[in-house]
Image 1 (tube, protein in one colour):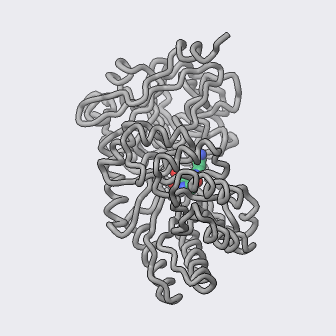
Image 2 (cartoon, rainbow, N blue to C red):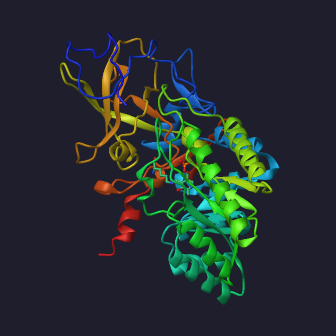
Length: 464
Ligand code: LLP
């Protein structure tokens, strides 16, 4: 996706530097509510940005930088919006891989959401934070025997089975525990959905699930129905991530209902559940236009009802698994600027005190982010900037192209919004960086929900 440059584009020279950049915003001090969480505001007098009633200067002082600052009110209201949109006839499973901590699990429980986990570690966090086991779904394409054992012993609501091998393995484990484990079978429906495109071609060439068109899904159902340790309750489909176009979900829903009809024809059973996965996109920049939960819920429930009516099926209970759409917009990463290097005719490199160890998404997916100066307002002209980290790698980029005020200086605080999903959960210790804390703010109070790593943490693992 290429974007056109604005006549007032880069500050220096006529040659446009390579990269994706948009026009500088009319007002660099304005915080677009699309990309910032609900309670973020810039004080009209001081120009300092605050969230949950706390200003970023105070937050940086108390908790240090870099830090993920999470807006609890925003998180809870997104949970509620999803819950209300789907009503009581559907279940919302928050995808824990986006970001999971015990505080998050408690909030989910309080807001009536379930949780989807995809490892023994995530399952342990969910269980120790008091999520009832029956409200947990367990995913993964290669769950270990120990993980399946843990899930069955805990009594998770359902396991989403991904392969023939796993069907047998899980059935055996369930039988040993004297239970019939509820399972959904994960199918690949032949839809690959991206942010701005929707391709129906080579998508079955992947590690997840059993393909519909190749007949593997139908075979998985046959096998599941014969295994004593399993109770097959439904079909699962997840088509991708950061999706804005509902068309992919609609095709997926139609094909999953088609499989339910085939199952009824072949086995005389109507499976009671379908899970349509996660993948709903969020706004990382002002150019992104995400769908609202209510619109998503309406579109999915309507299509399932319509297809079921046409196929003579009782509509199954629907579930969805949004991760990014709930937690992504709720947090920003707060960094302190360390160096500002101006390259005449190119761009200005702004080095911050974190980088690819706290946000790998730019390096890994060429992801786009926004950034703003938050410790003060500025009336300086826009400066085309690249926000980079402090790691020993030139691909260590946090925000590829963005406009910051030209008077930006070392010591200023900048914040990158929409980093709640897949940033802390994919953080690394590259260069022995210490993973930043997650600080939850709400109604004038801040609370560390995941503390900053210390050098002692690193040394504890390095047993010499
Ligand atoms: N359900 C299943 C089965 C999934 O595999 C995923 C994500 C989700 C739900 C949640 O998807 P979401 O609503 O968060 O898009 N690391 C990548 C994203 C990987 C997503 C993997 N599966 C990123 O940073 O964009």
